[in-house]
Image 1: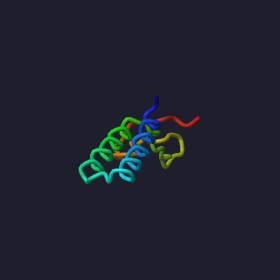
Image 2 (image 1 turned 135 degrees about the vertical axis):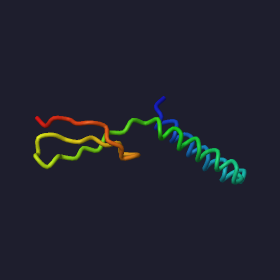
Image 3 (image 1 turned 90 degrees about the vertical axis):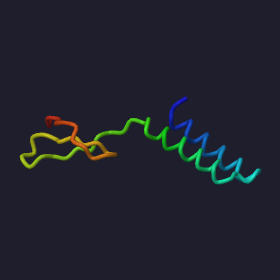
Image 4 (image 1 turned 120 degrees about the vertical axis):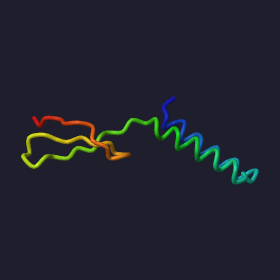
Length: 74
């Protein structure tokens, strides 16, 4: 099972429980926290920004925007 499949199951389970038994705010918070934790586990592609000389890309984290390195342009 992938992280995305687990997220989808958690979201569906939250909606089902809320619909049938009236999930309280604590329960909703627990589901949201679990989904957020799983989303952090999903690998994301870095943001690539072409430098001013157009010979390489600077790589940045899509989440925190920190600098990751350089990738030469082919």
